[in-house]
Image (cartoon, rainbow, N blue to C red):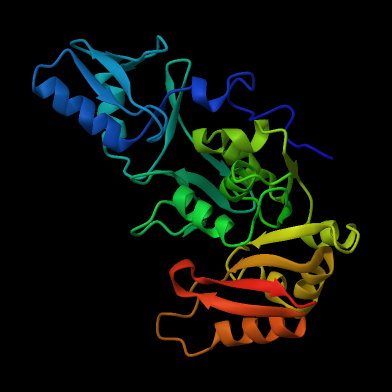
Length: 299
């Protein structure tokens, strides 16, 4: 199966995995400043976006990172004002984890795992929930041990990671947007996405990919497409028929829909999605807490 991004990100050393880099956010910078004001010689903070904790040593005009890196007081003061942004430390410089392509892409810090934002639209729910934990909950609704799984819109890879962790035999995760994959390569929470041997990351249009797969190739699917306004075809009848075709008899699928018309607009997107899924051969149940449909292919 095809893998992607063999050369890695363009502005950092591709040989250095995210778990060996240091990441800074405004929250970390503020914690360092607070410790310095309180005349502490060290502070414990997360340098990998809330995965683990590390000790940062404090001197008069700089902070010393565990990997030998240093940050000046001026750098930290500037960072403290950049709320929500994520920076990676590279050769003494703070580089934002962002890309300018067809859209503007950036990794966005949260109180737990980061999310991806594309031109101002977050790709995960973050209010009152952790994107990583939410992915686990979603995957548990449809994926079982030994399943072959298709992940239609890979994003940061959280879904694919959890499918593998929960016992999937193989996960084919399709993400056509190279800028998204470049951001994922710099996300500590996405490291397993590229290094777990059970996950194949495929840089291809998902419609073309599904068309190339034999009928009954997968026991489970997770379909978490971009917003309806950007990828309307991924909410269409023809696409649902393709998803049905590649699933085995009684195969399962989770389909995130969200609430794209929840602010005053009257169009019933959920009803239309449910009707098209039923036409494609699925029994569907809308799960409010997950803002999506759990679907079972009819025999």
